[in-house]
Image 1 (tube, rainbow, N blue to C red):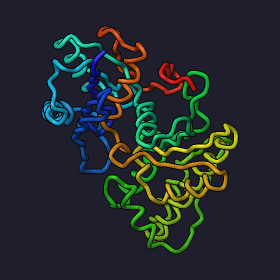
Image 2 (cartoon, rainbow, N blue to C red; image 1 turned 90 degrees about the vertical axis):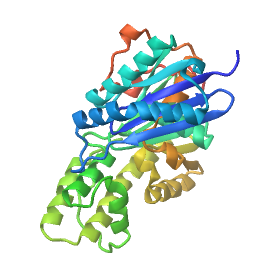
Image 3 (cartoon, rainbow, N blue to C red; image 1 turned 45 degrees about the vertical axis):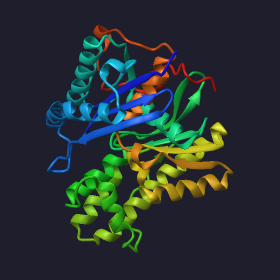
Image 4 (tube, rainbow, N blue to C red; image 1 turned 120 degrees about the vertical axis):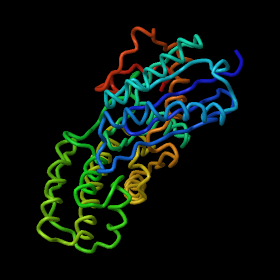
Length: 331
């Protein structure tokens, strides 16, 4: 078989992304357009409208960057979930149309697994414990007996959502993580915020509520940001450390939008050293939602025989990663 080219369509939340992966050249395109809400929170319908308007130009740009035509593509991969229903439908409709028009196989991709696989690809780590933190997800997972199993997750809101909402409510803007971390470095006092770890799981809703209360009570925004980051990240590191000891893995990978955080990277790196484990973070260009991760994971799935009929390609807004058989991994 010659060169395999897989195009990936991503539209689970605020990003309309198109990537192209080549079996011979790796990632050869990763184009995107992001919906940026004026008020700070993602409105699913508005995001979907953004995607429907920008996907044609993003697709054209990706094919130009990859120096190929749709006729050259081997398979079309699409993120069918998890994500926001209106947003998922736009990407799924585009992927189905491309697959039908150009008579290409359609490959279903789980968005969360794509974040994991692009992290393994970009770091070179083979069998790591994965810490996946983003606006919509916070979980700790690793590969065990054919699937990615969850060894800890949030019981309510994600870490990214917690920080984004705090930033929105205090006027810091969107995305919230970089803005809060700027003020983190100016804070000096660790305030009394709830540290909620329940077994292997974390809970961020109470932390967010109390941080907003302190803001309304007039506490220094710098001290609140410092305390919020310290508590939120320490909770995650604790459950990650417990999972590392339990699974006996020797590698740790951080992925997802919040993976760009240098503060979180440093905390996890220090924890990894204590246990003689290697730590790495996904490359920044693949941290947030992107089409390249869908294309690459689609390639792994396609070459393992995973395709889906057009009439069965329903979106799955609540598609959990442990429901997916990972046929391309043997260990």
